Length: 202
Image (cartoon, rainbow, N blue to C red; front, top):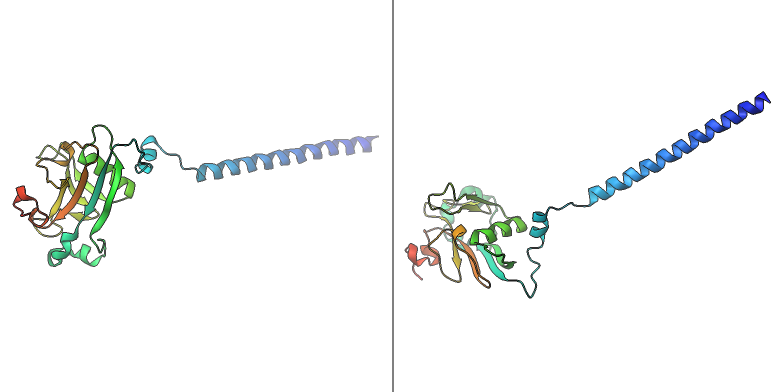
């Protein structure tokens, strides 16, 4: 009887140990599955979701078209920053962003659209805030590693809306449905891209 009792106790301990291991393995498997799901699921903020859906244009959407180009630098390669000339950083056709349609939100300025577009398209941009600019507007210092003075002392970024160069900063120009915005790099203070009010010739 003592032998049987001992076997019974051992059997009970074995069963407990077996089920404990089984429960542990199930728990470990569950944790592993959850870890894979969490790791594989990208948790997006509202801003991130919005940026990924900039081009979800519907028939009801108000939109604007934006492009970014720098063809002028190839006419002034001798004065182009050597790092840009030798680093093959600039697109060979000078088109950083082809004409692309974006949803227009109420109150959007030229800067708002540019800012969202470069983030969405992962295009590098650097700017000076309106609070630090003497013009009382955001100033675009560089796009796609091409900065003011990167191609001579008169070079920098200018914008055009529906074929005209506004005489105000980009964060002060409010956009309307259907407008076309072009960011163009100039090497001659606008003269080479037709900015008449800057001294250019159309």
